[in-house]
Image (cartoon, rainbow, N blue to C red; front, top):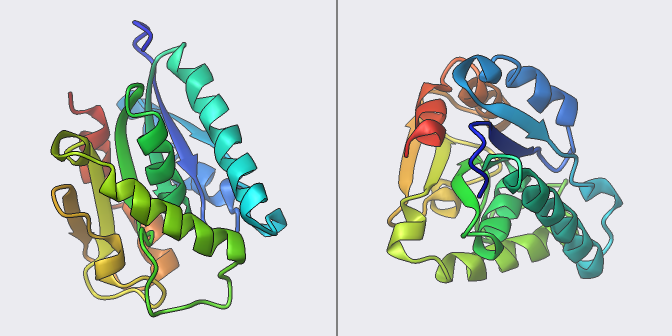
Length: 195
């Protein structure tokens, strides 16, 4: 890890690859000493497991590059949550903190019309990745979910035993993501900045 004081937060958006929305929601984060780096993962173009692996590799290259410039944390929104946990397992030595905002981290009974084969495979990878996380690793992970329900992701798909698991006073998937990154972002910002 670099001795530079810059703290980069690599942010992965939802299955819709709505990077512009995530960038807009995090516009004020630099005022708190965090530099958002929003990456489009390419979910819409992914047809199979090989495409998923290429996408994960592309993110790891960016994480490695940023780690040479400063501190790096990861934040995933919805489907991006499964990506950041997978990346964390591969880059625990250089990733400072990980945040999952309303993202399923394991397969569940609820399916969405937006689910793709690559996303479902990412959930399988993620479930295996979580088994490889030790107690200290889990303390570097924050999960965020809506207190009043999410139509796509159930609470048991988000919670990681031993991690910091919080709720925001919201309901609904996309609204909860937006409010978690803006109005209710204090817990996320404090967690990312903690030592």
